[in-house]
Amino acid sequence: MVAASENKENESPNKPRKCGLATKERAVRNSKLKDGALKPSSLQLCIKKHDSDSNSGNLWDHSDSEAAPASSWSTLPNRSLICRPLPVDIGRCTCVIVKESSPDGFCGGSLYSLYTYEGQGRQNRKLAVAHHRRRNGKSEFRVAQNFKGLLMSSEEGLVGNVTANLMGSKYHIWDQGTLNSGPKQSKLLSAVVRFSCTVATWIGSYRRIKAWLPKHQSMQLKSSTTQIQHINGLPIDWQEHMGNSVHLQLLSRVPHFNKIWKQYELDYRDGGIPGLSVKSSVKNFQLMLENNGRQTILQLGRVGKSKYVMDYRYPLTGYQAFCISLASIDSKLCCMV
Image (cartoon, rainbow, N blue to C red; front, top):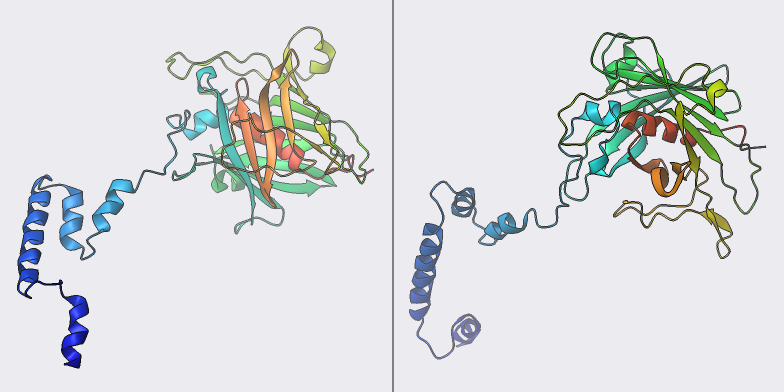
């Protein structure tokens, strides 16, 4: 009697036990009809036939439902993103800079990697790596597309290097002369970055940044098949031609002062950085063209202890944007007075 009463919980009420077998047979027939609607070569059908979990087929239907849409730069190869100005019709390109441990073969220094930020559910691409070290107290960055390019000077993966003065207030960005197809050239001055000396205070200060770029960069569309004009670089005596329009000048946007938190802050809400929370940092900046203060050409924001998000647009190349950001990340004596 006790055994019979315990089995009542597993039986259908007011129905004989053999009715459960009929229900099971109908369920099997319905499953076969549903599977028959799928093509014999369907991967979903194959998964359902060989997986004992009846709910596993639902995973196939929703596996990509949360993936972010493809980025506007997803079809551009890595070298184009690094070495050529970003096409105008792409808008902006969002990347992440991460400070990582140096692999074998590097004697000290720090390593920074540049990744594209493709969004949730998509694979980011590594565009470049930079090795930082100091010589006689001065910072130097060596930038390449891969580790082999950092170790071997003759390797095609080497892109260029960044040199700084002792105070860390001025940086020169050089490329190897191989950014465009054709015979190898001498090093070109790709950009100059200058930081104004500031006095650090308890309420937090901000840096004033100016950057100068060569103006000989032609406009390019993503769909264009024409060859891009060569980047000639800044002339060595570029400062003597300040009024001749031989270069572009970028200026940093002045941050607003948060009276509650007693610190300077920049507004990143319209910066195209979804899903990343930017933290306050003296290394953050937003650069705009001298004659167009509304549009942000390059911005950098700290999102972690050793992680930064970078967002750039035309007329910058990925290499220029990466190096300007590295200059801001680098520690400076001029900001410790």
